[in-house]
Image (tube, one colour):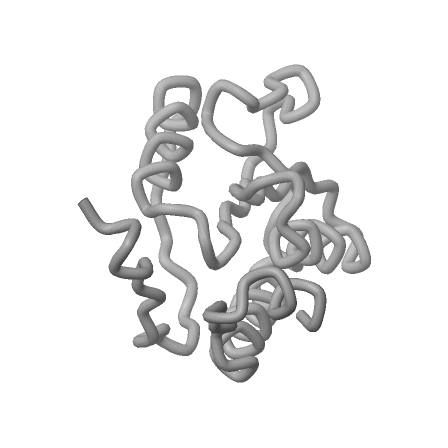
Length: 133
């Protein structure tokens, strides 16, 4: 952060508890659903440590997982014909992409959506005023 502050003196980082909250909450959700899943898809950017961590948590629990950015990235051969697929997203992945992946799964499988019980996320991360159009 020091190098960024030197170059951009007005930069403000999010409070660390905001990011930790979102990350730990989603990791706990993956731990809760992993025992019931044959495969797990994580929606997020490949450079998102949060999203990568979600896939790693599933893998450590014995669930084969893949990080994808959107529905077009699903490797259908890898996915196979599992009876249960877990779906989660990194904290910065928009709900629109989650719905896109869910719809792609529904096109190929007889899908029943089941929302896992988890701690509701009430925090919002707003764009800086300069970026709002």
